[in-house]
Amino acid sequence: MMISRPIVSLCLSTETNFENNLTRLILLIVQSPEDAIIVAPEVCLTGFAYDCFEEAAAFTPYALDKLWGFVGHRLLIFTAITKLGEEFHNIAYALSDGKVLHAQSKAKLFTLGGEVEHFRAGEESKILPFEFEGVKIGILICFELRFKALWQQLEGCDIIAIPAQWGKIRTEHFITLTNALAVMNQCYTIASDTDNDDTTGMSGIINPFGHELRNNGAESLSSTYEKRTVTAMRRYLDVGIHV
Image 1: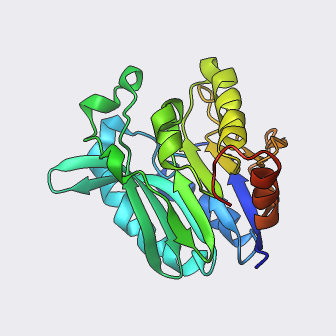
Image 2: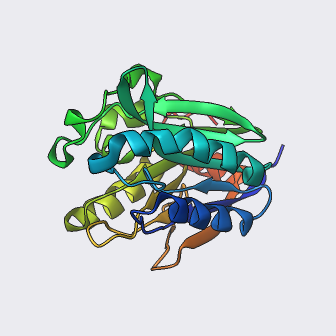
């Protein structure tokens, strides 16, 4: 069966005003096709907000409640600061049709950014694919992109989403790794980074043949996921990834 659907990469700046961030995200969601797969940046609603961490975590359930009414049949992937018991996690959510289809806590925390002092790391074993209407999807959160063992855990995915806040001084690393992931795993990569002064702003979509599209300053970039493109690449150059 041929599967085709719109895919969208967002490139947002993050304000200190959480409501403004949520309003902007909602606007971009409703402007996207009704069956789109959308990837938004890491902690795009609050930033890391270490100076008001409790408030940022409390904003997450409120934001989820508001997002239900706008996501509809789309799939939205993003991360948010979440408090579980007395511990804080950076959790990737995959939302569609009023449900959390998949939730995954960031397992590889970025030491240089102070994440280890604020977050509890998730389990690497839970970085696994999930299904959305016939599409096999995996998520790597920012720094997790650097770990080749995690690429192998997501081998066989049709799409790998990368919500990120990636440092501007390592822009070339982000471009190289997102491109390489698509080629190595013969899948679509949808990368979404913030467009702040200290981040790359280099969101983009890369297909299994390595064709690269970058937002180039646009808040939203659209392309099309084609199952037949994944299948064709895996048959053309058979490296052992099942079609």
